[in-house]
Length: 378
Image (cartoon, one colour):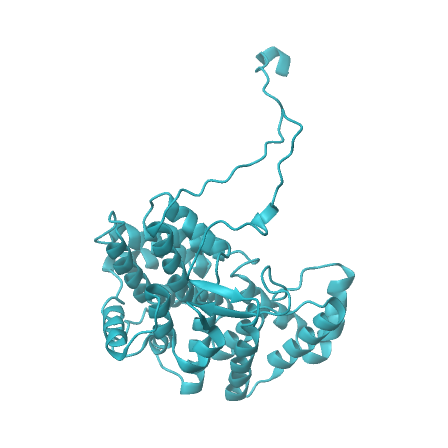
C-alpha cells in the first residue's frame, strides 16, 4: 500500500462539488439568497407559494403564473385510497419522519409517470409532491393519535390548508404569516446534507421520488433537520428563563452539544435567525406565553458571551412551531413539506447537466492477503 496519503476533506468541508444557480449565502451581506433575492426580503414581500415558483422557475411569478401554479397544486392534494390504507397500518408509535419518508416512497410507486425522468415529468411529479406531502404528514399524524384524516380543502392557500389538515381549522392571520415565513426560510439552503443526498441520487438517473425519499432520510438526523425538535425538547428540559444559565453551565462542564447553535456555513450568525425570531416573538404575543422565548434569549446570550457561537434557524423555529400548537415530532416533517421545493429545484438542476457523483476514498485497511484454511482460523 502506498505511503502517499491524499489530502482528505472530512465531511467534504471546503469542497466545491458542482455549480448551482438556486441559492447562495452572500458573504458581503451574510444573507441567504434564493435566485438572487435575500430571504428576509422574500419573507416580507412574498409568500411561500411564490417562493416555490421562484425556486423552480428562476423568477418570481406574474399574477397569471401564480394563479396557474396555485390551481395545479390545489388540484393534486388528495391522497389515493391505497396510500390512505397504508397510512392506517403504520405503527402508532412510528416517528412522523419515518411515516412521511415511507409515504413519499409509496407515492413514487403509484405515480402515473413513475418511470419518466424527463424534465417535464419530473416537474409535474414535484408539484404532486408539494401538494400531497402536507396531506400525508397530517393524515399520518392524526391516525397515530386515533383521529380520522381530514380531506384537503382546495379553496385554501397552501399554508392555511396545512393547518386545516392537522387541526381541522385555520388560525388567525398572524399565525399563518409566522408559519409562512418559516416555510420560506426552510425552503432551500445550498448543498446541505439532504440536498446533496438528493442530488447524488438524481445523478444515478433515479426518479425524483427516490431523490426526495433519500433527502428525507438525511433530514431526520439531529445534526440536520431534526435539530428543531431537539431544540424544543431542550427548552422544555431547561424549564424556565431563571434556570437557563445554570443549565447551560452544566452542559459546558460536560462539553455536551447544545442544540440549535452553530452552522457549517455561517460564522457570524445565521442570516435567517433575526427574521424567524421576529415571528417567533409574534407567536409568543399571540399565545400569551413568553416563557420559551425568554428562555431562548438567555441561552443565546450566554452561548454568544461564553462560546462565541450563534444560534441557527432551528433555534427560533422550534418554539415558534410549539407555540403554533404543533406536536414536537411534527416539526421536522413540516420542514420536509417546505424543503421539497429546494430539493426539487436541485433535482432539476442536477439532471440538466448531470454527471454521476462518485467520490474516492483513501483505503486504510490491510494489504491484500490470502484466505487462511479453516484449521488455521481456530
